[in-house]
Image 1: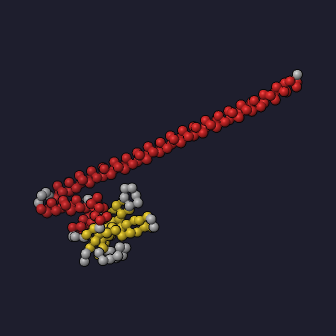
Image 2: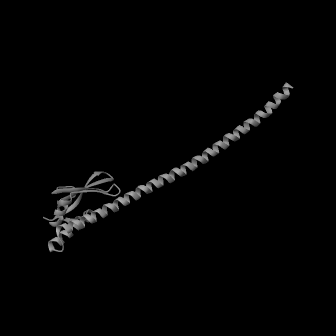
Image 3: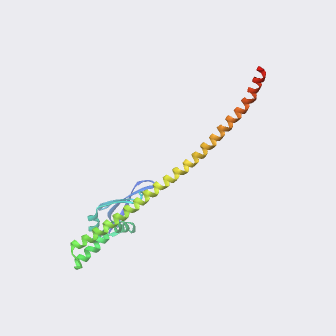
Length: 174
């Protein structure tokens, strides 16, 4: 039986949500599967992956072939790095503790990089919001200035219209 690690589509129309499953290569995409090892949501930024790391590593080590997208997901999660490090342990290049230390260092650097990207996006959003708010304030000031000028012109016109009427009253009293 040729075993594949692939995505099984779920979610509504135009909003895909995938399960990462182990299935026979002859089974249909959304059909029968052997085991569900995680989920993948490409709709978030960055894409959200919830993976059972140990089971994914087990299936990769026993020879399950991932699809291209799943291979990228597993690679980003570190499954292939751990497989590589375990191969080094089997060959005697280093011990299990050193392999785990290398993996933990890689994982912490990856998390730190993801946090930096997330923080940069957040700051960019805040800066864009501040810029929009400043532009809106300028527009509102310009509108307020035009309204004030218009009111002043109306008040001046009303004063000019009252001035001749007041002169006529004064001359009529005299």
